[in-house]
Image (cartoon, rainbow, N blue to C red; front, top):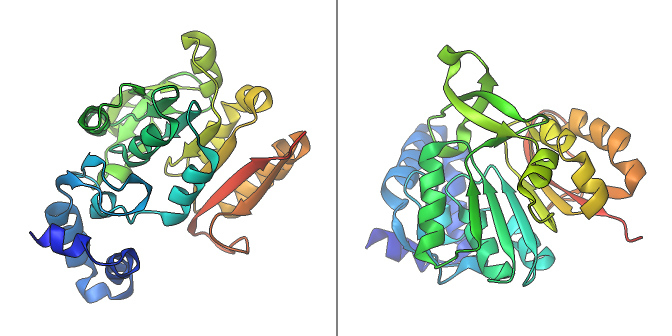
Length: 270
């Protein structure tokens, strides 16, 4: 009942309530816990481009079920995906954006959801099944610059797991793929749009898909985790010269300092 009541509020009000956890530390921990453990349930997405889809948000964010998570990213999906397109969701978590993309690309398109956390993998599969999206293909692997294996440290929430090394004591052993190798080995379709949310591994992922970028020239959305200047230097050295532009998604200026934000890399029309 509480989830339903909050769900009928305007999206901007729901997002404002969610942001209180970062603005009022004394109650922030409770708001975060409440959102992840009480409001993140199974139901119907209330707002955004996924409105009306079924979704199990257990283990994720209540914003997934409310449809209020990352509105700028949702707008970009709606702008750059259309029926028949191919979407790569790198760091799919419990499958929120994969599910949204599944609606947008339709049965003639395909979604490749890359996720190393086995708990999240099952959630991505479940959310695809809840909506009859057989065109969502789940790849249980992390993505990096080279194909192989590594260890995954499971975070306190599903979206905070990170690759930490190759020692067994460091975490859960997982498969790792480079996108260039994945496309070649699996004969997979190349992407029209790539979304990257990989807790600091953004540059490694781009290094492992350089051939893919050259060949298919996808739009790339990337959540940048505290490496803004380093990421921009990589872009200017490796991608600007092959016809890409970069800007902050949902903002005018490139941010200073080590913060988390979103960028979009756009191919210049040939």
